[in-house]
Every structure is written in structure tokens, then in C-alpha cells.
Length: 332
Image 1 (cartoon, helix red, strand yellow):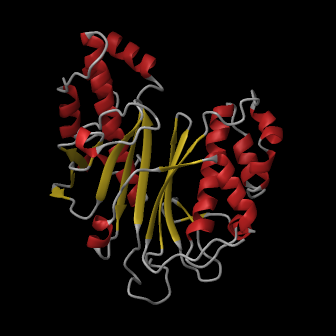
Image 2 (cartoon, helix red, strand yellow):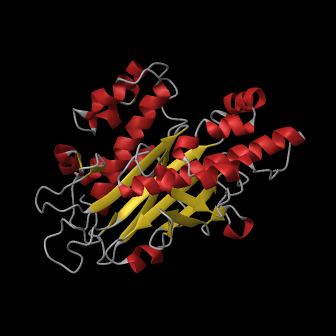
């Protein structure tokens, strides 16, 4: 059964795959060849070895989920029905900045713009389909650069013990200085002076947990923005990018509890400055999922800024592995 044809207006998709409970029987990566054989069989032959090369099973599962989500986005969202087998046969290429993209072999167009991030067992994808791109032949949007998207997911607890130990030994300013080369000077100063205290635990522990949450929130925002541009954290202009007035989104009560904007669990009102000028054409959102995870999302439509600014960056839909595999097999 082919995927349904997309409506004329662009579609924004935000999806998550949570791999933490996948294949509990697999204690070593090589065991995924058996336990994850169904999923692996749906990927290109060149992709499977890349997944199985990871030493840690958790890393291999993240790579598997990332690959599945990319193919799922192309097959599900392309305006012209695109069977899963076609996305697998074509695989992905890279744009001049080495950002993974999918080019439709029939039209030489990029039908879906997407970006993927993973951390601590969770893989997030943001995608825009049906928006005219610079590779589209003809049409109002030709040459406008299309839709640009970026996403980053962070987990404040994954390295918490290590982070807290480092802060205890070296101090909070030294912790910030270790990462100062990827932050703007104003952001470094802000983090060093951060003293907001969350609830729970001892006073010192509260303060350090609040500092770390602010640190990871800023990291996610910057990473999502940089990925939107197609660059990486080695970009020469990193210290010329600055987020002002940002704050960490407050934790939600649990993984399945929707984030509420009125409770500060969703943040949209940060300012972005680049090379001394305020960036006005990027739509960004920082959203909490549970007590530990935050996801930053960024979208931009360079040729017509109001389009991207008008898209609602809502909650991410958590997909199950089963529904992705069922869709892949049904779409042909």
C-alpha cells in the first residue's frame, strides 16, 4: 500500500523514536543481527554494516533508529508517493556542507528537508515536506533555498554524575570555560553568573542542577540553529552567534506528560543575534520531555521568512518501532 499523497500546503513533522527498551535480549551489538533482523532488512545493504560497527548496543540502536526515521520521513511525507524500497535504493547523499539530504532521482528535487538528533536512547527528527526548494524545477519557490530545519535533543542526566564531579573539583566557572570556544562571550558570562535554583535536593545540588540545565538548554539551542544552517560545531563563526534572554524549559512530570507552555515547559521567546544583528527569520522552540530531556527545534524559509515563522512548532509525536516497520513493509 503506497503512502498517501500529501496536500498542497507544506507539512511539518516532528517525530521521536525511543530506543531505550528496544531488543533487551541483545547484550552485544552483533546480536542485533538476529534480534533486529526485521528492521535491518529494511535498510540499504551499505547502511547495515555502519550500524553494526558500534561497540555499544545502545549506540547501534540509535544509529538504527536514525536510519529508519530518515527513510520513514521520505516515504511518508513525499508529495508524490515514494515507496520505501525506492528510498532505500536511492539512499542519501550530502549537500556541499556534508548535511545528509535525499534527492528524488526522477525530479532531481529535494522533496523533504529533514534533520535528526539523538541522545541517551532517544532519536528526534524534524522534517518539512512540500515546500518549494532551490532544486525544484519551476514554481514560485525556485531559487529560494527551500525550508531549512535543525533539531537537537539533550539529556541532563546522562552525564550528570560526571558533570557534578567535575564542578565539585574544578568549580562552575572552570566547567563553563571548558566549552567557551563554542559559546559566545555573552553566553559564557551568563552561564558563569547563573544562580537560579530548582526545587529538590540540597542547596548546592539544586544550584548545580539548575546550572547544568541552563548549560544543556543553551547547547541544544545553538546546535539546532547550527544544524539548520548545514554547518557543524566547528563553524568558524560560532562565537559570533549568541542567544540572549533564553532560559531552560522547566521539566515535565514524566515522559508521557505533555509540556505546557504556561508552565514554562516550552520556551519560544529567546533572541538570536549573529554578528551583531538580531536574527528575525528563524522560528525556534525549546521543549521539555520528562524531567531530563529537552529538544530544540529550528526552522527557516529564507525566500519567504513569514512561512517558517508561521509554522507551529508543537509537541513531538512518539512513534513505536512496530508502526515504522509495519509502514515500511506495507509501502512497498
